Image (cartoon, rainbow over all chains, first blue to last red; front, side, top):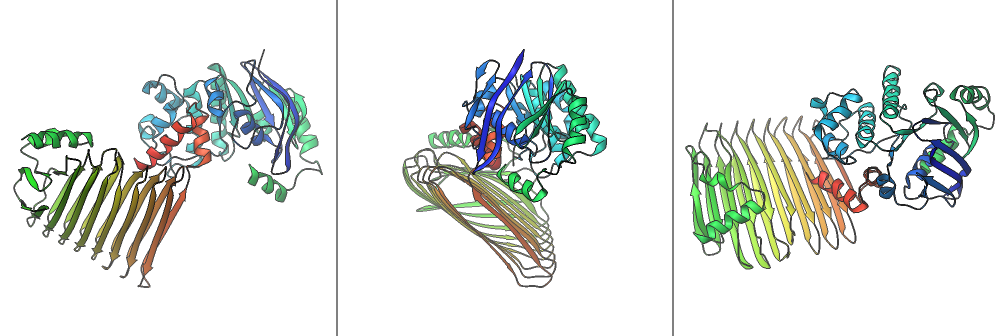
Length: 248
Length: 311
């Protein structure tokens, strides 16, 4: 049964078409990966699903757990069990790791916070009272974002490129954490541009230029991505990627 | 006696722990308006308050080589709705000496109150002075606070000041500190204030790194909302070889508040260096949306970010 249904959503930002009549659904209890080249609209899709300001679709509908959430505010969606782990997580001067992870938890039990830190391979005694500021490396911050999602126990977690900026040795750990989320009952919408990461999914949707190009098993979609998308001459070139990333 | 009890209640409201005034190992001084209502000193610390028509003159001295083990607790305030309090402090920390002061200034009912504090502080060589000051002004904003200090820090010494005004209204606040730092000595000044309503905040902090290898950090964290206005002038001058300094000002505004930051970095020696960073703006959209994606309402998310910054 789908936990998330996206029906023909279109999103324009500052005159640019980011998503075009995009539709797909995510089955409850699965990992569904969204694969696509840079600037395909993957992060914009994540913000749109989360309800971030400036990312409300001009048309189409988003249904979460059977309810139309297209115009619901971010916090309302979160209360229904939807959350987002950002590709480049924010930093918070003065806010401790312990307090940050506790934000999304119903029961702010420290043992659960410690458990989440262990799950992302961070030693609680070294991190609980650290401040979420620039003293944390990008990799640490990414792990903490995943720990916050694990501790929140959402129904659906959108993970926006949890593998980006992560070294190859740590990649296996990240993949394990995503599987752990699924084991704990969270449906995962995994956004990535690495086909080897997309492979852990039960189903994959390939997005390019704002719409779904292909859906299927990770292996089939990955093969298509490798053979058709990577050499595609109409791919957006880096200069244009920058333009779109600025908007994001 | 009643004033003393009320002052301690206000002190507790401001975040202080009243039991310290019963501990014989801890020096303290409690002043209500122009009356000294509590005083206790410890060995090596000279604490001489003298009442004046409008306040109290305080002579504070830490004798040579003495490091006061426990913090010295100060509590100044005015309990009625109206009044003037002028505190003049002359402090001398002799060579090799050190002291840490925890000061609470409480004006819980202020409607027409003026509090002026003027300090002249001399810190000798191989000495330290830590001054932590917490203010509580109540909810009416009918108060004007004017702290002024001139501080001289000798060689191989350090000065730390932490000022915070995070509970209740600010009223009108006009701080002016100037610090001179000698060879191998350091200065760290931090100010944290949350203003709202019609509060007016003006801070001028100047550090002069005049000794070789001296260090200075001036840090401000200010949040203003409603119609509050803040102006922060952080000035750091480096005039000696290997002097290093940094000015760091962060101001967050909400509603119709206005904030101005004027970092002044002045280097007059080719081997000295001062850096600065200043940022003013509303709370970061991404920070707010991150917290909202965990279930907080927008106002709750903004409060959490601002309170974190001011922590």
